[in-house]
Image (cartoon, rainbow, N blue to C red; front, side, top):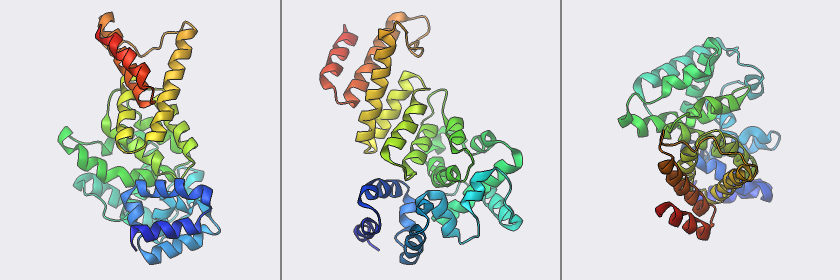
Length: 294
């Protein structure tokens, strides 16, 4: 099925107010979007969606693509091993094989099997942190491949957890880590939630990292075409900082260069100018840039 035909089919099958957000989320992940071009699979999804609207989440789509009898509701109820021990062994083996080979999954069903393996390993060890550590790139040169290997499995894994936000918390970098940030953004934007919910989730995470990481994160989102989301997030960050300043509270993330207050002020001003630009306040951005250059 051609992409234009798929979009037309989805718009015809979904309520008008939901179709735009849902289609944007489905298109975010290449393997999710690719799977829906299969007429037989799409028909199966549309049939199930009539009674179960949650079928559109990547975890559910991945399980449906696998053709296994696994209830997402049960997976989300508690982090316990799969009742089907043979499937659990197969999924764990696929996860471990992917760690070793770093091979990008070719289909959504492959990514779903890897995700089940990630969940099975987490259930056995009781640690999501160990899962995240095991998939990080072994070297800077393997960043792009590693990102693509785990992008879809992480997105499906997120939907299989009792507390999916725990995964986002673990992925959240304390220092600049592009791959962690991009995985988080991909997971959130692939989830077919209203855009307001996506913005709230991203903001909750952005508010916990330093200003420099916030700016870099928003620049990456802007480059990926998420302008409306970026404008909202940049405006919220600026409003919060202004409110803190008006209350006499100094933001805690301004010390970029240790011991150099002047350099800190200049860098902070440049970051704030970038936020103003991202929030479409170009005049205020120019004023701040002029201040930074004095």
